Image 1 (tube, rainbow, N blue to C red):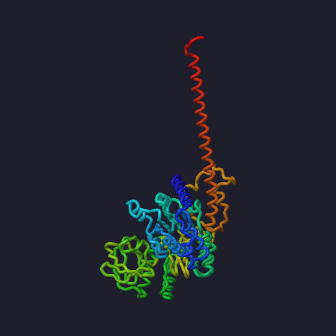
Image 2 (cartoon, rainbow, N blue to C red; image 1 turned 90 degrees about the vertical axis):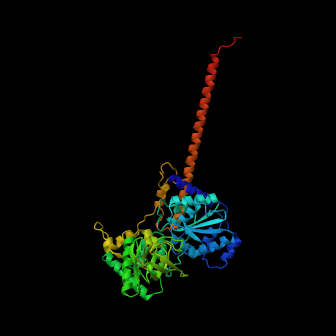
Image 3 (cartoon, one colour; image 1 turned 180 degrees about the vertical axis):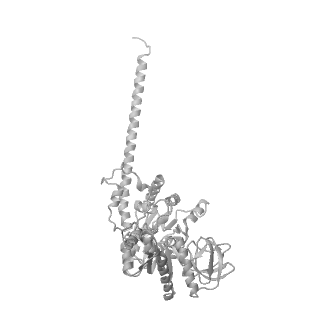
Length: 514
């Protein structure tokens, strides 16, 4: 893994230092003329459309990354480049395509095509990878290697503070530190100033401050038990639908079990209110489920034939004998007909896990907080909304017998836990590496102010990584020089021994006496 990471980071540095795929100033100005980008978005635009075969953008939740990428796509296409999009999850790829106009698929789909010899990358191609922080080291290393071999450009977009990579490593953070990046920290998704500030606090790891802000607005509600908290959440969700029927809303939880219970109880509330029509019991991949006209529905598997992704949402309009007509969410309101005998990867769509919702936006969210949360999942859960987010929790979940702290303090501490993934390279033995300040990278990192944003921490870490690599290279160079000198000394010694042997043999040879 160490060798893989070093190779990936070195490749990222080579790509970033390349002088290809530059969009001319004229093409940049043509796109920027409409003036709809903020100053910060404009700087990000100029960075990703500038020279180099690798560009990294760190953007906090709701910072307008898609808006900037839509402008970048137009500039790239005007310059004659072909722009392709990718993401780890199907729904993230769909969101990227809908928001920026970049035709996108999952990374797994791209890799399957490349392995079969189809749709190969070329010198005029740009690959934009969204939610790059979720990608593991092995997969991202493969993609960068293929891009370098093809002479393509890669643009990585993500946020190291949101959900961590599913597989081994934290390559996005490492590459951002190694190759440099541009950042977006202005929040556009939320409207109220205090909510914008709370999202920035979540992005900086200052979770407790953000929670206190929502608490002051009474948007954090505690109940005695998790069951009671779930009941209060469902009541608020139902009331929200009655008060604002045209707004989108979604319930969030950490585990599938909690999500399923929320879905079941949400349907019961809707049925009791007469909001659901005719229903049928359908055998899905997760077991028997009853679906009815008016039900909200999640698709759980990518299917090109239907044009749906894992995470696509829709509303059931008609059903008969296992055939569902579903109107998909989105401005187009596209309709698909699903034969559940052929496609049964379905679930009710009133609630979802936090992991399934990264990269999505809704008007109002309702969060069931449990001890499974950490600061990364809390950040995602509390930044999906445009209008409001209300968090509910059971005091029994945050009152362990061994703790002397208050329930509220335990709640704050649990949702503030850092579970940041690292590269194996971060755990190298520093004892043999001489850093100019005589301090290890871990010591330097520990001394960074806690209030720094993710991007600011990455900037600091970039300097640390550069010093560490420089020290390693100097050590390797010194070792190489020492080994070479030892080899030369050995060769000289052997040559002297050979000369001595020749002289001795000449002394013992019989010869003519003069």
